[in-house]
Structures are given as C-alpha cells and as structure tokens.
Image (cartoon, rainbow, N blue to C red; front, side):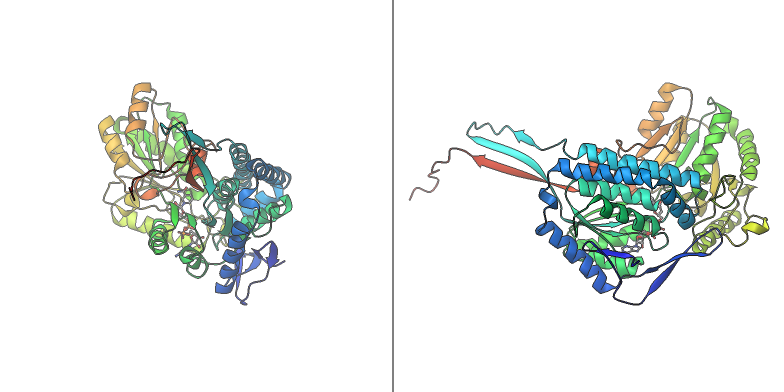
Length: 489
Ligand code: NAD
C-alpha cells in the first residue's frame, strides 16, 4: 500500500526515494516507506487548504467532530495489540510501554472529544445595552504537525486530537525514524470517516519534508515536538510567514530526593525516572539530586539495582528495557559517557554495551549511573536522551532548588520528601512545566504539559492544548445603529 495520505487517498510519492524502517532490536527492515518530495508536500498542503476553505469540517458542529474523535478512540482500543506491536518493533520500547501508550492515546482522543463543544465562547459587557458583543473561537486553519521518534503515536495524538476537535485541517510529518504508528493512526482516522483533505500524511526527513512545511505560506500553524536545535530553526523559519508556532522541546529534569523520604520507594522511582524507554523520554529524571546524608547509601543501591535491569527484545515480556532507537542515538550516548569520564565523573554502573551475544545486533546500552557530577560537565548540562543517570549531592533545601533550576531547560522535575510544607515550597520554586511530588512521570490528558525556558513555548493537553488550535474572534453587533455626527458636514 502507498504510504502517503493526501486528499483522502493513499498516494504514492512523486519521486522514487524510499526509506527503510529499522527494528532497533536486530536491525531487520520492518517496512520500506515512500519519501515525500516537494510536489507531495505541496499537494498535501493544497488538500488541507481546500478542505479548510471549501470543506465542511471547520463549520461541522463541534459535537459531530467529537463523535469522530470518540470513534477513533474506539478503533484504537480495538486494534490495541496490533498498534502496540508496531510501536515496539519501530521504537524498541517494551510491549508493556507500547500498550500503555495506546491506552493513553485513546484517553487523549476521548478527552478532546468531551471538550470540543464545551466552550462556545462568551458574551462581553460593553456598557451599552444596544450592543451585543461576543467572543467566539474558530479554527486556525492548516496545521503542520511535526513529531519526534520517542513517543511517535502519543506525541501525535496530543496534536491531532485537539487540532481536529477545534475544526482545523492538518498535515502530519512524523519522524523519519519511526513513522509506522502514525501511518496506522491515519488509517484509523480514515476508517472513522474523517472527511477528504482534513488529515494528510507526508513522510520523510526534516530538511526535505519538515522544512518546506514550516516555510509554506498556506500553513497557518506549526506544532513541533523535538530537539532544541530543530526547534530554534523552526521558530526562525516560521517568522517570514508569521505563523503561529508552538515548540515542545527537550528537558534536563531534576529528581530531588530529601533524606526524610522512603528510601526504597525513592530508589525504585529514581530508576524508572531515568531508565524507562532507555532514558529516551523528554521528561526523564536523568539528573538525580540527593541530600548528602543519604547520598552514598542511595548511590550504592541505585548502582546495584541498575546492574540487575534486564535488557532485551521489547516483544519479550521478560525484557525490562529495550534498545536505543538507532545507531546514531547509541553513538550519542557513548559520546556522553566518554565525556563524563573525561570530566571526572565516577562510574557506578553500566558505562558499556551489554555482553549477551543475542543483543549484539541491537542498539543496546547498559543503564549507566555516574556519581561525583557537577554543573560544569556536559553530561549535566545537556540532554543525553539515553540511559545515563547522573548524581549530585545537596546540603539543604535552598541548594536543592538552586541545583534543580540550574539548567537552560524547564520541562519537568520531582521532589521526594515526607515534609508537606517543604514539598510544596520546592514544587513552587522549581522553574519547570510539570513538578511531581513523591512520584515521577505520570500525566493526565486534562492537565497541561509543556516547558519553561528552552523546553518550549507552548502547552499541550488540558484546555490550553485546545486553545492553541483556536483563534479568538470578537463580534460586535450594534443593534440600534444611528448616525454619530462626529463629522458635522
Ligand atoms: P528532532 O528535532 O531531531 O526531530 C523532530 C522532528 O522534526 C522529526 O519529525 C524531524 O524529521 C523533524 N525535523 C528535523 N529538522 C527539521 C526542520 N529543519 N524543519 C522541520 N522539521 C524538522 O527530534 P528527535 O530526535 O526526533 O526527538 C527527540 C527530542 O524530542 C528530544 O530533545 C526530546 O526531549 C524531545 N521531545 C520533547 C517532548 C516534549 O513534550 N517537550 C516530547 C517528546 C520528545
């Protein structure tokens, strides 16, 4: 089947370029997909524009749009096992994680279905009883949705569900590394009855497919999730056509552990915070900040437990962590480990590829723990996006907060303590978009997600995640017009 979806039809790319999608467990080819060229991007934007300007979707009652989103949620549940299998063979993450992702994605579709018709606008008191003043919300137009490889389906759902709920038309550009679950989601949207041209899908890399979308004059909004460097280039490229642009970028997320917390629980969570999906999580708790009275014992326990983590094929239920997504990501992690060692960090666990021969073909790297870390190290300052956990000690609350905020990023962080007052003081002082108290990683569709500082300029999920896809329009109706006589002649 052709792999581009343009104007309601599965379409072959104009050019002959193809990309192999690789299973990171063994480097086998899962599927070969077509790569879009300039003509395909133009056709996808034209279809989305025609469906917006001339189609019914923007004016379809919000309750009908909601019905379609509910139908998609039902189809996701129906095909959950197949989709989870696709996501695991494409990204390497464990099947259990992929199954949770599908549940979460269905919940996101249901959430925006429920929200779609809840806010028809508001009346404004003008002080003049003859004037009816209304603020209404309208869709923005053609939205380019550009997503990363770590949570391909999940990140796409955070964009496509609110964009459709608000009445926009979209062109989806998933990561070239992991396009398969996005293809499947578009199949489900088509099956649910999304009108022709409302959803379009183009595949290919950033420079040749993403960049033309961002600079296209008929694209009204870009919603991008990915790395900081790409985010900067997207903001620059969107300036010429003054698009609405929301970027959701990386993180360097502090996980702060006070000595009064439950040792076993905090150690358990410190490991999942850092090593879930091999650390390829924007909100990974890669930077552990531990009170000094607890530090040595905590680090020793983390090292012991990290060495026990079972790597393996994500499809094998015995595997606790799968491979990294690609050879490039593995090389990046090895580079960060080398730099941490060169800058004097003390290796406590990992720091190597696994020894098992059956993992030799995969992009595996052992969960790695470094102690003796400080702010001047690259491994502390930059997002490694791999299974690397660094540990820094702190003396008191003020120092914990200062360390937690000592990053250019501001996506997420956590504080572990049994002192309720301190928990909320620290949560209030941390300059991050999400702060967990005595927990790590959970999110819900109803609560906003996004970054302070260089972690981004938008918010996804929650009511704000819908507002990003809406224009507010003020309609002023003078019900008793009479001449003003401002000009006397
Ligand atoms: P990336 O920036 O390399 O690529 C992301 C997407 O942008 C891909 O689809 C890519 O093809 C496209 N792209 C690349 N160059 C482009 C260009 N010039 N114009 C338009 N599109 C372009 O990111 P990645 O490596 O795929 O993902 C990892 C990053 O994503 C990490 O930094 C991670 O923290 C971040 N992320 C953030 C969140 C969040 O919620 N803030 C969630 C998931 C991932």
